[in-house]
Amino acid sequence: MKRVKVVVVGAGVVGLSAAVCVAETLPYCSVTVIAEKFSPDTTGDGAAGILLPKEFPDIPLERQRRWFKESFDHLLAIADSPQASNAGVYLNSGYHIFKEIPSNKKPFFSDLVFGFRYMTDHEMKRFPNHKFGQAFTTLKCECLSYLPWLEKRFQVSGGQIIHDKVTDLQKLALNYDAIINCSGLGSRFLVKDEEVYPVRGQMLKISAPWLKNFIRDGDGKTYIYPGIRYVNVGGTRQADDWRMEADKEDSDGILERCCQLEPSLRSAQVMGEWAGLRPTRANPRVEREFLHVQGRQVPLVHNYGHGSCGITLSWGTALDVVNLLRQSLFEKPPHARL
Image (cartoon, rainbow, N blue to C red; front, side, top):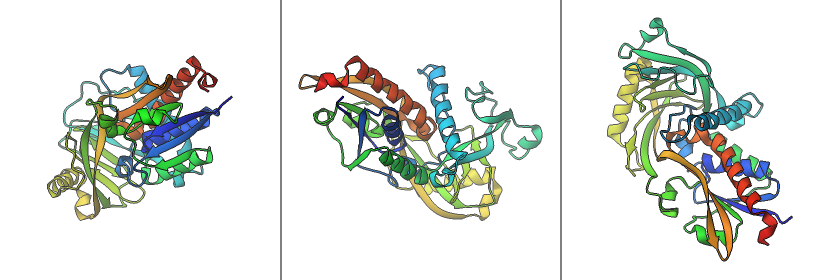
């Protein structure tokens, strides 16, 4: 059988996860990743990388649970292996605190993380401005290590890498049998999807090695995430803001909010600032269509718009991509397009 030429557009955590899944799962496919930016220049490289899903309004909850569970299980297996250090994946415990008691005190992922429980009154005394909290252990995945590790794994499985900017999927379809679109914000231009938009996130890198537990405020933008190299403190959620440079006013606000949660940060050294654009949609787009090119039907599988959940859902949505691609090739077998 002729090998099926598959191209993945985008080399962030979503794109590389999809590329690895296809290359390792479908041996009759030869997979190429084409992207303008690779690690350390992707959005994921600056992300805090803690696995903490949000609920999307129009995607069945069971599908969201599966995306998270498959991603959690995949990364947990790495955290439990000798590869953990190279991949930058490890368990992390902490607190999710709220100024008002949320309507859903027990989120859909509560049985998928470890040790989920409500915080005690004694624990809540540390946070006098908050009324309710959840304690649990999740995973942290640092893309500065994970993305190069994933890229190497992809190449070991026979994958090819091309540094280039893709501007036309129809032209790309002339040379490939299937396309997987993981272009994130680029999909706004590449497939004219105006439902995907940037949500700007800014954070600081702090030297505070005494901090071991994460703290996340229910406001969705204030967090303290201890990491291997430094502590990530943030952040911002600025919709339709395309600025990539750090803003001093934002930095000052972030530092003040985080010092209120963790006063010991007031003596910590700021090592750097980072700003990035989360490719956000009301619901991630994980679905397929077909491009009609010179009498051929070329499967186009979309996988983008994860917002702040890119790392959190990356492996689960990649497995969906494999199934969508397999279905497309099964419906029109590869040898029929010689």
